[in-house]
Image 1 (cartoon, helix red, strand yellow):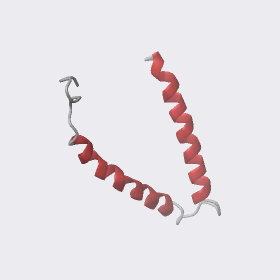
Image 2: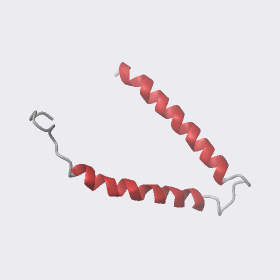
Image 3: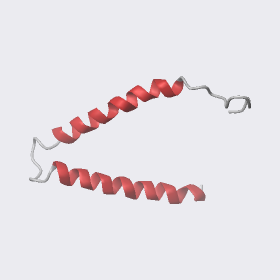
Image 4: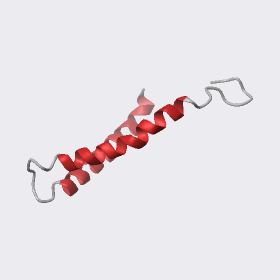
Length: 70
């Protein structure tokens, strides 16, 4: 568990920086009622490749070729 703490914290810092940059880009003229629609549309666009990749990942073989191991 301790060996995973460093990469976990690094990913948390990177995602926080990406989120703050995205908020600054989407709300550059101030926060208003139209503002949340733009990030929502970009997130919806990002889910399409993920939703497409999920069934493809499940179709991959579960064992390494020639080893019989998982």
